[in-house]
Image 1 (spheres, rainbow, N blue to C red):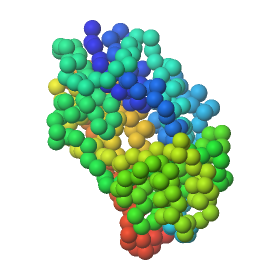
Image 2 (image 1 turned 90 degrees about the vertical axis):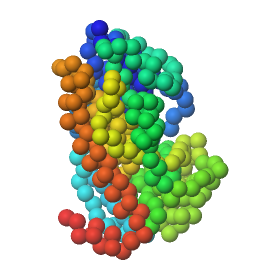
Image 3 (image 1 turned 30 degrees about the vertical axis):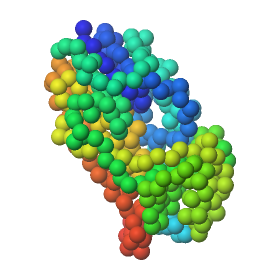
Image 4 (image 1 turned 120 degrees about the vertical axis):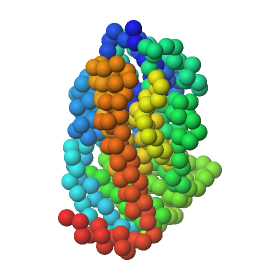
Amino acid sequence: MVAVHVVGGGVAGLTIASLLPSDWGVHLYEPRWDERRVPTLFGIYPDGQAVLDQVGVLSDLTEESIPVGEGRIFSGDGTLLTSMKLAEVRMVPHTTLIDLLQRHLPSHVTVHREEVSGPTALQAGAETIVVGADGVHSEVRKSYWGSSAHARKLNVTVVRGVTETGPRLEGLDGYWAAGGLFGMTPRPGGGINWFATVPQEHFETRQVALETLSRRWSEAPEALHEVLRHADPALTLVNELWEARFTRKLHREHAVLVGDAAHAMAPNVARGANEALLDAQELAEALAKYPPGKAFQVYQRKRHLRTQGMKIVSRMVHRMSSTRREGFRNRVLTLLP
């Protein structure tokens, strides 16, 4: 019997564990599900929604998410630069999506509430597969690909969170200014999901981070200040932004990477969770059809170039959003159809 050890219980790990054949020995390792979580939002596009339908959670997700069909980009002072129609993106709290996927885990999946610090120890034989679904700082990636594959800092600090109330929004609003951006979307049930970046900076507390944002955006429109006035440090996250380094292959020996372990990217095009779902679907389908070696090659061909391209686009949008050449950037955006 094939044994699959899925390291990481995020979107990618939970999804592939659910989609693998029921007669395989599937083991899922995740020690941190009980930690306090802030319900910031994921954007799930139609192709990702199709994967969730296959898992069996789409109807529940639809009830607990909100559609966003329009995006607007403003300059830091509130001048509208461009607007765009979006695919039928559904914004869902990350905590809700994880909980739904947990509840729908098939009974043949064995869950281990433990850390895996040496993933190579899981490799017990030719019929063993190790799936690295453990995020940008993946232990699987470190163990099989070595130090050259460690994550890379983007020299940016991200401050993000949710509020229980705030301005009325119809879609995604993003404010782009020199040195940082501020984005916001409506939340299911009311309130705002918000996201801001600043050049890399250490904040002593989350309250200090919020005060710094208020000063940095002192000339911004009232909608942005309304969000920051309602921002609660307890519902705020502060972290550095990292990106997965390029690897020539997504598989090595008996190990294969999915989700952020394979292609963690800047969040500016909101495709991270969606690409993790597609990774899981393609890898599960390949493993159901072919022996592991062949399945890894099929997965590589379908997913590697796409996700690396998405990572490059995300990095470019990230740099464009906070460039100090605002005048040139703004003129370009106003020319977009």
